[in-house]
Length: 413
Picture 1 (cartoon, rainbow, N blue to C red):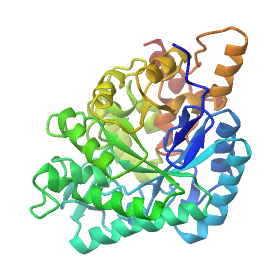
Picture 2 (picture 1 turned 135 degrees about the vertical axis):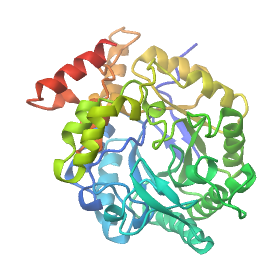
Picture 3 (picture 1 turned 180 degrees about the vertical axis):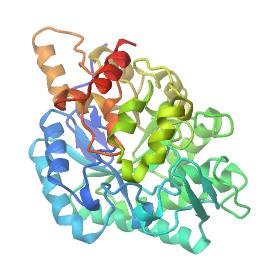
Picture 4 (picture 1 turned 90 degrees about the vertical axis):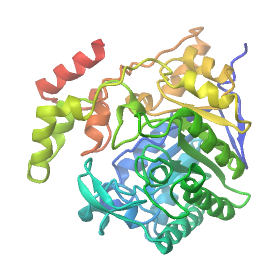
């Protein structure tokens, strides 16, 4: 079958030059919650490297939705710097997308400026923090915040918004019975638990009008027994399709319960603990060294690890589907596209080498049919990401020997 990889694709009102998208893996480069030179340089390099579209990650729609000090939240004062970023992306022939979401209970008071909120009150052991259940009036305010954020994204020059409805953040927290224990119209049955998501998507589509593409990242499963399972997640995906969005990104996992289902492989515990500042996180560093493997268990990695489950969604849905998860070589990308998926997303491979897409094309011109990235999924970039800017280990000088050994061990797997 002839490869579709370097053919254009019309995603709603926009056309991508090829079938590749830089997925919304958190960069941790928005220092003081604002665009930085590092963020500008990274996404410019990815656009220059040949992708069809690059996605600026994990932008909160309001301050209460912020998980990290170096995470964007959408507000008027950052629009000029975001416009410089999108102009640069466009100058290299790529489209610009931004992921919009709300972290819900995955934060702290000192990060978001208020008591963390979620569908229900309780205690989030992962953060750890007390959580306050949202009032109905507050739910409406967050719905409207999504719409306002879409309009600001348009003003900032973005072609597309990706709504984050997976991975155990706020929309996902409403959908999952693990985190939603409400007894009103937003809780109980799956129909009720999807209500917040449907209200958000209705507002987003209203504000996106006919000039912005809208895609939604959703879970195929949460990754643990008391969470969402695949059949109910297909029901959720069908509701997303009914909202009129232009595409769905199929992912899985729950950051507060099953984080490695998202990324696969092992969390580099020594790397994660090493970069955490002792003054703030001494207790968490100690816990990681003592019981880190129990806290964040390994989930086996293989190439295209979501593909078989994603095919079950492909069989049930008609809208464009965007595959993400474990793509490092040309033949697997072609296999995914030939399996009925219109677009592919990648992250770690583009942290390792922002020019991966151009290198595939150059290899093809030389007669090499199966170019493969040098990324071996040690997950160093993930371990580092929670404290410093996301970066591949081969770009870091003078790594401590214990981290080098951890990387070597992971890459041998």
